[in-house]
Image (cartoon, rainbow, N blue to C red; front, side, top):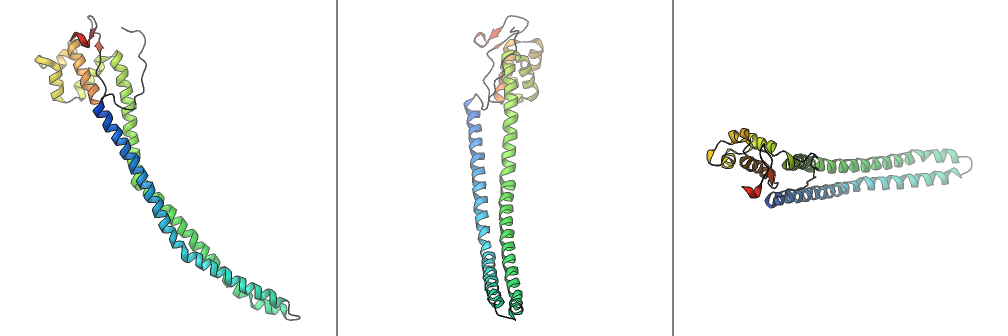
Length: 225
């Protein structure tokens, strides 16, 4: 028995081709979905921003009105004796232009805020749940595969026990061999059955089977079966 603990390998994808292909397809699917959602959110943002046109027009009109009345007030201010009064007569018009411009700017800012909020809402509702679920499932598989790969080198008994508690009944019966008593074979430490049960658990995760098992007797390698 190896006195040193096995080095835990970080597996990002399954070792068996079928499971690995499914994982790659899932990754591509999530990536494509995320790109589509983000692209749609950007397009929606741009469409909503077109609603800023009336607000920009209102801002320009208010600036022009204010400019006209301000210019008239400046010109009237130069009239002797009554310049100040004449200039004051144009002040309400300039103030009205300022109010129009401010209303237009407020409308532009409100539309921009709505456009940004809708874009983020699309991303959060459509992409975030998918990406979060994918990440959690991927992380859980990576951690379990890391532990299973370490157990494959040193603790095949544990993998066999996991197969007994988690594996499909049909596969467990086939792994037990002619006797059909998988649990009894595990308690007796039957190396042949232990290897086959370990394969059931490893195959469930898309990993290659164990190559050897050590019991109270001599070590058994897969070629000895």
